Length: 280
Ligand code: SF4
Image (cartoon, rainbow, N blue to C red; front, top):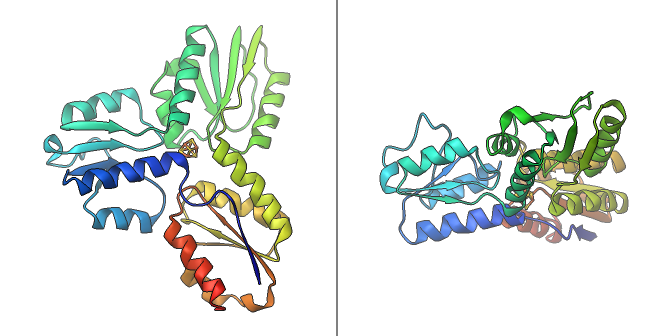
């Protein structure tokens, strides 16, 4: 049996950076709390909790010992107002917003200063989009997934970093046709990690007889890879852990492909590879 593993697997740069920092701090005996889930993966969350990292999900329910703890802002970023509040309530706040996300916030802010209305292709409820809105003038931005008509002197179209590149191109092209403006700026702000993983998902799905997509069931980027793979190979499955593989008859496949989301830990990937190599 041949196994083809995607070249980009495991945590993406932004998640790895936040994960390593959280571990470094607890190993130095600091009390650490992360605002929101670092990634949509229960295994990772449990591992961090076992090592002493705490989590909180609302500014109304801050940890009681926040004033003697370090608060971590995860890779998606948060609104500025929230960051300011955390700074008042924690001994220290470490902002681990991914630099790629940070650059999108800065770009949108600069464009607003130049008079552009921002149109962000993304999901309104996604943490990164909430962070974007909360770091710029929220009256001069709209976040949406389906193009509609805008009437502004200057419009600037950007994307959530984890959206599909081809869909973004279609969105921007349609919006350009139906909107009224004097100036338009279209900037592809999709993260390179997202693009590489999506391109590979297609290649691997075409090459394989069976594709295993490893990642949390709530991880939207893992689900997206699954959708891409399924489009090119109906023998694609999305699993959380190696245990789910046991119900499949894998011995009949000669070529098995493996893809992972940006929140999938290396441990889960190694367990799947070991399972396949052992011959079930
Ligand atoms: S997907 Fe890209 S932008 Fe998002 S956290 Fe990972 S590296 Fe950063």
